[in-house]
Length: 583
Image 1 (cartoon, helix red, strand yellow):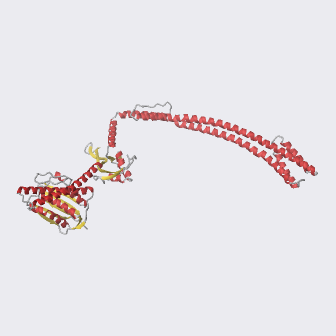
Image 2 (tube, rainbow, N blue to C red):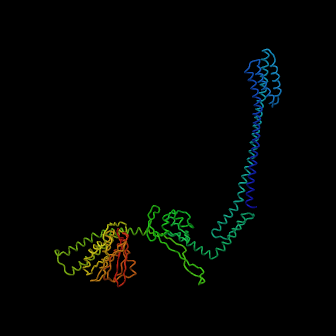
Image 3 (cartoon, one colour):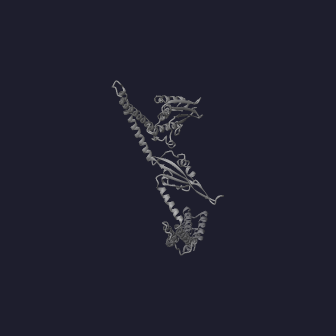
């Protein structure tokens, strides 16, 4: 039998039981109502007629007038029509006979005697009806008690039937479901030998057969190559889930393939199920996720507040390409590459950021503390050169010159470290003012002119006509030019030339410094503006701190400019930067 038919029979049985109990209740309630109706209708009317006749006698004196006679006779006729009790007919007949006598001519004493007889007959009728009311009330109460007992028995029987039905009938549905649930839980840990057997022929038996077929198919699949592939996939997903970096994978349809818990926490997605969703749908209510999928944060560290703590991340995105096998016209199979999606990785660099800040603070503190003793050393050197203290021989003079050079170099490094700490902590202050480009160049040339004269290097200025002004921080821009010129003088031969050029590019102005040194190898050019990087030397030139060009880059980019280098071995080097032209 089908499960649907079993449910129909079960609910039909419940309907019949409830209908039977309801019909029984209605039947006995109707009987009780009829008993009460009889009591109220018949006997109460007789009492009402008697009361009205007594009231006529009370309200009128003897002999009764015609109106009173007529009213009394009307109530008597009503009572004659409402005789319901044994003995009531004789009492009514006696009342009628006495009332007929009262209508004749009598003495006052006779009328009073007839009145007393009428009152006795009325009292007799009232007693008969009152006793009938009491008897019928007792009978009705007994009928109600019998009905209540019977309804209680019927109710108890109905309760037992329904309780038995509620206990036993659900087992028809629950027991097969429980067997299916047990089978599913057993098959979960890959116990594909689990089978379910039902003796009845219903939908559950069909489900059991389908379950057994599925288990057999799964058993075959478990032993196939697909199982190994899926196992590897599961292993990869587990590795991704356990990584501390936030990882999001997107397929070529812009659907989210996978996203680990770390990424959900970082992107504030909670425990929502976003796998399979379009990235644009998820990004509608999540600006951070939108900026990540549009690669607007690639390569730039950014801050995210997680659990009330500042965390720093760096975005890396990689295109995933897979072989594309498709039939070609010239070859049987054309093998190419096609995009299979993209992977976004948010690397947590909070620890490195904190270390970098600690390093910057340390450098700033040490550099600041070193400037005072270095200045004292230079002051002592200056005093030692004073001939009033005493004459020094040539060797002592040479030693002092070396100490002075090293002090200058150490002071310069200290100053560069202080500038760097300002840049890294974001405390760099720029004072933008409209200025002519040549004034910046003149300021820088004046700063290195003595150094150039000592080495015999000629500083040549080449500039375009009608140069536009620039909005720049004069001091820091000149600092960059001084750094370029110092490097050019350091690596230029004696009696050579260094050319400073100012070029009008329309919307910008370029500042170029070209030397005639030996040049820089191409492999080092990309790292020249990295902090602490130094081009390997041949020992003839003292290398700097590796910070000057890095600081120069920060100064220029802070002014919305661009910095670069062009060089080739044996052809010298050209360092340049550009600044936006002023209005």
